[in-house]
Image (cartoon, rainbow, N blue to C red; front, side, top):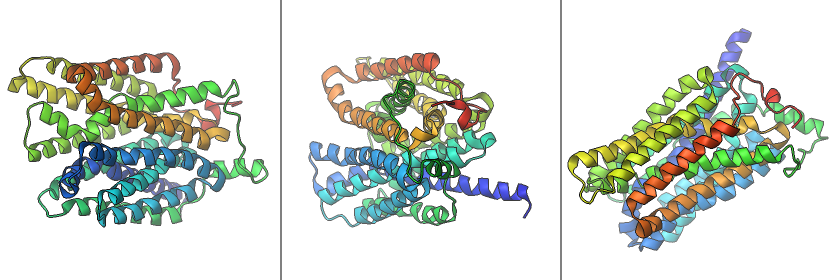
Length: 418
């Protein structure tokens, strides 16, 4: 095989790994959006237990993020991805066999641990091993696959909504992307950058001083980017899409589930658009454009919900705002943030730094999920969506002022001396 064909085959292997890991992450994150409707009926859940079941995966993801960063630096990126995938496959089987709500919750915690590790390690591995001229596309492919996984989860939820105990199959299908991912990981080499750094540290991954004055700004920037991705309303549009459509006047369960699939289609379509733009125009322009659209989308939704009576036309406008938010998130933070964090961090800090950023990512996601119903009860729907629009605007100002462009630069050039 010629060197060119070897390179193409290697890039295809990385792409397949990015796709499988993203789909596994996205499916297991999103499947609860539909499954919870039936788990509530199956086990007669109280509102509190329902919220715990929905949020349990985010607690698991926070633990998985920290574990992923530590494991990736100590045992390698490839080995950490393998462990995360095995945990996800086992958890999917456990969830399908649940006999009470506590096993469902344990399943969601384990699933969260799995995709929390994957979200930490997979972007780092892809950034370190991908050719420099295709790093953006391959990094964004992970985010595309994540959105595909979310969409598949919504479609599976809808398809099984009329099947008796269909929620068990919804959970079980989480094994489908795990099996090919395990096979792919066994074909992958370890990250050469991790191996070189470990060899240069006498066999031990160096522990950087994250409080050093040259490191603190990097940590702050990556934490801020993580919070922007998950703390500006995406938790609402993912977990609460069906309820949002209900607020807008679509009251039947099937209509709400169809609407959830529609949101998933928007996510996938716009992340694919970002895939074609990220190495051409760069990370910053996509982030800024996406955040601008998120401001408008939730701003429109918030203003419509201020109306004392919502007409059919106003309801359609509100749904349009939701879809604009989803499209803009997918184009900007959804496609860019994982890649950008892994690029901004220096080699000595990439594993643990990604773990710290991921911890804040999931903490902000969890905070959004838990506070959404409480804030609506206290301040009303309109005020909550307008507040998220304001947060997206503040995030845009931060990106404009503080986030550098990394397009076309080698990883070592981005943070020389760090």
